[in-house]
Length: 419
Ligand code: AMP
View 1 (cartoon, helix red, strand yellow):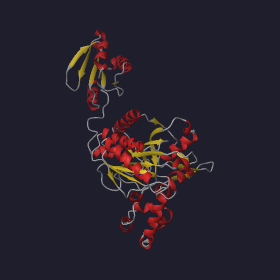
View 2 (cartoon, helix red, strand yellow):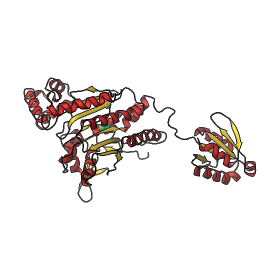
View 3 (cartoon, rainbow, N blue to C red):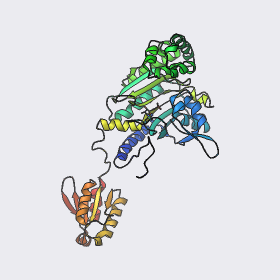
View 4 (tube, rainbow, N blue to C red):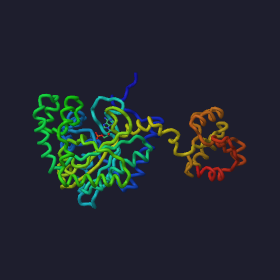
C-alpha cells in the first residue's frame, strides 16, 4: 500500500485542475474590474494573531486550529482564515499611510482541524476580499454586489444571500445585557457549551445546533430590532445599494458574528445545496479589528468564499460541461521515427507562434499516434512524413469537421494562429 494524503486533504489532479483554473481566471478578471489588488501572506502565523484576530470563543480557535511549536519554541498556527493575516500585514506595512481604502483580495489554502465530510476539509481553499479604511455603507453594498457578481458570472443558480446587522459598540453591549437578562431564567436548560457562551459571548448561542438552545434563543431579543440610529441608517443604506444594483437578498435576524469587533453588516450565501455544508461564502464588517490587532482605529469589511464548495456546486449544477478547454490543440504526428526531428522542429515553431502544439514522446507508431490525438481531444492533426518534408506541403486535418487542407509551414501558422 502506498502512502495516502493526510485525512481531510485532497489533491486537485487531472481534469479537475481545469475547473479550478476556470474559477480562478474569472476571479482575477473580476478583481481587475473592481480595482482590487492581490495580497499574499504566509500560510502560517504566530498563534497569537488568531487568538486576537479571530477570537478565542469561536469554534475555529477553540477546537480547529493547527497549532504547533516550531524548533525555536514559537507557537505557530496554520492560518484558518484570511482576514487576520491581511489585517496583520496591513498594519505591519503601515497601509494606513497609503491612500485609503486599501482593497485586497487573496486566494489560497486554509487549515481547520474538523471532522472531514463532503464540502468540509482540513485543508481547503478560500478566495477572499478585504477593504480597509472606509465606514461608508455603500462600500458594504459594493462588496456584497461584487460577491454576488462572482457567483452569477460563474453561472451559479439558486443563490440565496442573507444579510443582517449585528450592531456596534454602542448598541451591542446594551443588547448583550438584555439578552443575558432574558437568558438568566433559562440558564439551566442551555447546553453546557451555551452555558459557557452565556458568560463569555451570549450572541453565539444563536449558532448552537442544540434544539432546546435554539428554542430558547429564538424567543429572545434580536440585535437587529434594537440597533442604534447610526447602525439603523447604515443598514438602510446597504439595502438601498443592493436594491439599486438589483442584488436579491433576504434578512436573517438570527445571523450573528459573535465577536466584539464584528460590526454592522454580516452576510452569508448559499446556492441550493442542503445541510450544514451549504454555505459557499460569508463575511461582514469588522470595524474594531485593525485596532484590536494594534493598528489605528480603521474600519474594514470583507468576505471569504469556499472554493471547494464552489466547485461542488458548479459540478452539481452542470456548469463545467464543454467549457473547460481554453485553447485548441494541434497534434503533429510523425510517420516514422526518421521524421521525428522534423515534427519536433515544427512543434517548436508553432509554439513560438502562440499555437498549442504537441508531438509524440512515447515512440508510438503512426496509427497509435492518431488514436492518441483522438483521446486527448486534439482539434487539428498535422502529419509529417518524408514527402511532406521534401515538398514543404503538410496535411492539416480539422478533427472536428474531418476536413483536410494542404499547406506549407507559413500557411500552417497563419491558419492556426487564430484558433
Ligand atoms: P468562514 O471563514 O467560516 O466564514 O468560511 C467561509 C467559507 O469557507 C464558507 O462559506 C465555506 O464555503 C468555506 N469553508 C469553511 N470551512 C471549510 C472547510 N473546513 N472545508 C471547506 N470549506 C470550508
